[in-house]
Image (tube, rainbow, N blue to C red; front, side, top):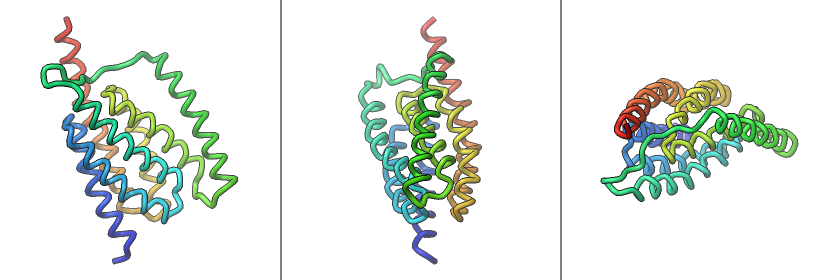
Length: 193
């Protein structure tokens, strides 16, 4: 078995463990996310998905941030699933779209990147969704549904069939995550009344 396939299998297992644990709001998700991201960085550099390698570097940083954020609250006052307005999301979407176009242009004109604009869009919006996940915004899952759905094709097109399959599982589990976090959000809002 070639080394890239072995790396892909290991990364898939670690990243899948991250997703299952984040859906359950289990702090250990961040450790698996960090390890899975480190493995994935190597794979994406090898397959010339440079925006993805930047993204997974960011995931390592956000893994540390998420761990600290989720552990900074006591058991009596845990971080809760919350939400922001459509106006706030609109601003984030405009900013993220602008950054994605700029990143896509850079990789299109200065590297041998494959699908630089598609890669840039999934990367930039995943930056945003990951931050939303770390601060427990319910809407993070809407972003993940779109990102994971699109990433199925992006990874498959690069010959990363295992990661493409992982994205299919992520896509399905993103709906599960949305439903679970929606319940947590409603429960918290009800407690405030």
